[in-house]
Image (tube, rainbow, N blue to C red; front, side, top):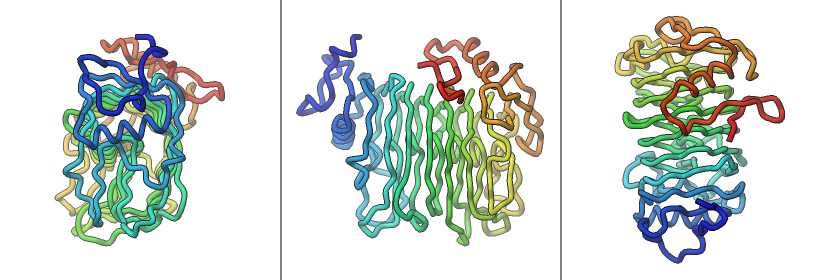
Length: 362
């Protein structure tokens, strides 16, 4: 497929037939907006591969950008139903999409962020550069992941550079808010800063923040979280479990395999924490954040954000079960050992970027 000969989305008046156009291109912010219009109209683009032909900056749409497939509510609500899924393949082609989370001026507390809302397809080979502007400190219904809110499909070979400070009672993460039972996140890297500035005092379980996902029911493999997470103090008692934060997933009922994170990257009101998921819970028995520790394998932490960093196997206090690393060597050597052993030929090898930081060889 010659990308130069592939038609851009914005050249079509309506959604083309997947039998005639199996490959389309995104080369501008207008293409991304048109893609969102197609999904909202009910076309899930199953069977179509969309390739990012160039770096795209969504700055012109910062005032009203919503994740692709999200149906904007006219009322304050964190209900996530009635949205439209994406079932195609979005191939980032090693290019970067930059977008800004900007305070909405419509008076609503709901601030939903991400590129997509419900991903049932494949999002791969993509770099996301996310920033924010305005005072987001009291947007209590805000939620999302920097790539998507809910992942039912596959996310692989993605790099997220995140910078957000928000106040929400809901969940926030570097890749996806929720990785569902059918979802898989593999060979991805998140760096930057995620801050939740809100104190929650409601009964129940609120405010989960994760480097990769806030909640994981599916599979997360060979990922790196070097994102710094900052929240208010943890509340864990008989009535409330609030401000839960973790390097990979705040809560996981799924599989975490060969996942690596930056040591002490969680700051809860000045208290540094070092765990893959929230490992302890008190008398609030409705929320066990790691119900099955046997699903966490081969995971560990590194103390310097460098490809040549050494990795230490996670302990019981960090992973709820003592870890045995599947591979040896430096961080980048371990990541590439997984890629070499994988049956997925589409996984990209890890490399050092021009500035010496960890990257993927697109």
